[in-house]
Length: 502
Image (tube, rainbow, N blue to C red):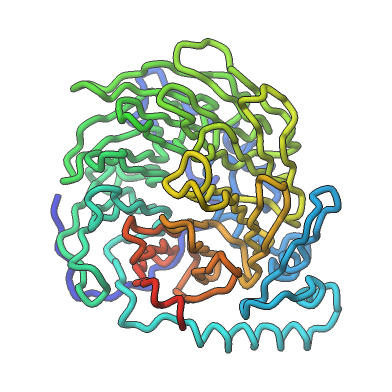
């Protein structure tokens, strides 16, 4: 279905209720015929959530739930985030950046430690003044405003680089074609990928995850109804994959593009064979004891998964048991990511730690155990640098983003935190390395986005939008960053290397 972008402005549609767990899972034909939703179990799981990170069965719901409870511990995220500590066991020097490229004491950024509200207010005023110097102009921002509910995620096409896909709580995904190379060029055709045929059919079909295949030809979407769908880049539905008995949280293509991997609230992970005309279950893995929150491929047949059961499994197609199980976390594990070489696996958790596991060594203990964050860590990302990457001569970096409002950059060779990026005033939900590995984009609740120069941890661009940011993503050319908002819009911000010279 084709749409054309008109001259409409973004609407101020109220955000969806943070009580996502009050929604009921549909028993429509989208589920297997014998599917009976265990609503009591779902409600029980939701009820035990204490405001830390939202319903455990919806990673997108975590943002909505946490928005209303980020101060559950009696202090703001900035207050706790600025108080990041340096663990003695990590060794090395940790540098906290204040945005001016200067080292500062962590206590100097922490109003709770100083007990001085006046200092806190002055600090925030300084941040606002400094951000004004790097703030993007309106002519550098293209707003995509056709969604009618929160936009949870976005992904640039890796080959057809003028295309970006977005997924929303309005039961749709969209493929937008850029009108040119910058914001002034506007937007061209928009293809609607509906996940329901009418208002009733669209219930419980929030698009919770999406990803392009490596050849750019196919887009996979996962939704709250437990169905994975595969579309071609023109917006035509190619596969409808039904087997999960609960919402899908994560979808990943393997490099070859013949298998699609999904993780679900139903505790299972499924490898789908989508190489033929009909997609089918290649293998289903039922090793987790609670919802599977994230999955990531190591290679074309081996993958990792994590769960609210506090474990990480490494599995392989054809094997009935996990190749490895990591049990070091003491709370729900939110994300797993393999490094570019496929030898190191990073995981992050509600236990406020990130861990790096050396799969090749066969050890059950983490190679590194990073404990500096003060609140839950929502995501981890590896830089596109170091062994196995397209930038092998640049040092490898692991980024962690937390509800404490900070982003930390880790040297995984030394096992030390090198830089703390601490300008955000609320939970950071997304980070994205630029393709060169020279820059990092971060987005938080309260709508703040920064682009950081990693050489010295200095923010070189800032953008403030309406609502909360759920995801940020770079395009392949490193000329644009997209940010997804709870206010139903996607902001596409121009970036050029010469901006670094400001």
